[in-house]
Length: 543
Image (spheres, rainbow, N blue to C red):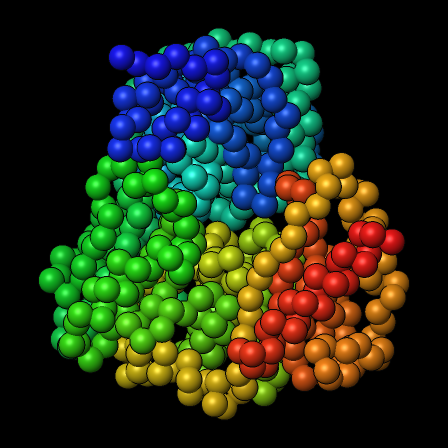
């Protein structure tokens, strides 16, 4: 007998508490998603609009957001149109929009709603089906499309859906675009708009994987033939955990089928086996088991999130988070592949790459959190020096002449090429770099705060840290006095100390939390830096 629930949130709570017995409740979630017309506040975060399916992310709310975008397309607002990278609405209609989704529940149905509304306005549409985020970006460039709408919440849990909008350069939409969409969508929400569905017709399917392969072959940042030859000839094992996501089947298409490549969690599963589908240390357990059971000389394992824009590496000896892999990628691309430029990284990312770049005479740019902030250093028409590599500690990476989106598939292929060229497993290469450039131990944590502080009140309280701690000042970490070498306020407050250790304190943009990012020069030293970060935060909040 099917249970009754007051709303989708309670239904999801039952589903996620026991996924083995609750899959029959998913039709109820669809019912809530179709019938719930309650308006919500639309907010595009660092990577799109996200909401719980049936609660916030409903068919009507999706139609409202899509209608808001169409209204902006049709407006005479030249700044918005030019921000997208098109000339006018006629240009959008001609070049078209790529629409698709990851492997989430109701992905095809949500996509059909978007396509129907676009087609009603005479806008050309391509349906990508299930596809990872980087394929949308490369597809835009290869098709010269106006933009893409990718229905994914990235690595969020199974009860979430999401909406990513990418303009004509293929990168994540910046605030000059998303703020205008928010304003229009929220005006419609305030008017309690109910948008009638429009049946899609003549849906043209597009093979984004084929376009992705052509893209990476043409760009030549990766040597695809060298990568394929390595897998074919060397004593290696590669393990890929797709976590039931949209990257499944992609590596087979790029590298061909080979018994040396093992794939985990490729089955359909809207609930991800009950886990948080992110490239976490815990989610690497299956990969590590496969690698440790192998006697191959070369070992590589990767886990990718459902929309294929985040990745974590391992080689059977250790896990290599992006804090380390991004620095290794820079060294490999600059030293071995002779690519010139700068390093772009988010401000909360390890300074290991700074140490390497300083000795190699390469500048480092630190940006706010969010991959969209790398755009000025990655677009081909940039007046600035272009990035050799762009990465952030939250598992995202791209590189010179590649897509403006973070790309897990690229991260995997680059790891294989690095192993092939250096003749070293990733942990061996990492040790050599640390022996030469120094050892760095990054970590992150945080504390919860009063919900009433979220937003400007919390920012104002935390600003006291900047007032109290200046460049050149002395601060005690454990039993040692450290000089504050630099104070960076790009995103929160980052204090860099004279031994290369640092801490960063920033408020969460969406939750009642303060996040700490720290880095010590020894494993044991992390505890004391964390203590200091928490003390500075609590002192500022309680002042």
